[in-house]
Image (tube, rainbow, N blue to C red):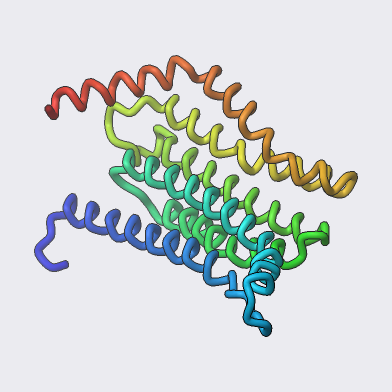
Amino acid sequence: MVGLEPKHKKEFQLERLILFSDAVFAIAITLLIIEIKVPHVEERSNIALLNGLFLIIPKFVGFIISFLLIGQFWINHHKLFGFVRSYDGKVLWLNLFFLMSIVTMPFSTALYSENIFIDLSFIIYCINVAATGIINSLVWRYIGNPKNKFAEEGIDHELFKYFSTRALLIPAAFIIAIPLTLINPWAGKYAPILIAPMMKFVNKKYKSVIEKHKLKLAEEKSIEE
């Protein structure tokens, strides 16, 4: 836009990046439900309709899981760019690769939902989720690097270490699921429950950092009021 000061121009470009990212998240979540087709029922009866709905239960399960995962990634992305004041080309590319893995999730979800008893379909889904989480962690680490000066002034860089470490928990669980699936398919599918205890461990490790951040937010809120 003509006439914008360099600082305001940078803020405008950053806003464009965030809006574009939000649009991709919204499209990915929408595609999840679009993949679920209304069951075709030849016999017009409640029993026939119930049978048709029963057949697409795996698709709804896949939709719920992926919806929550994409939602969690969006929350993390929202938090991250709340700290960002500047960026470079590498941030743009990292963000693009992250969004590519997000927008691929409806496909891997549909693939797994349609082939729930085929191990390869679950492994492909795990690879997709793991890649998303790993790239997410890389974005946190790169933006949080004090040498790059992308974060707002006064931000504790230990907080970025916490979030980048936490971002690895989801991919870690799904990476563990891959070899488990090859050994025992049912064991592999339960691997994501490891996220909860790993999250508890990380939160305990960074307890002082989290409390310091919460205190800072409370102080900022009281000042605003």
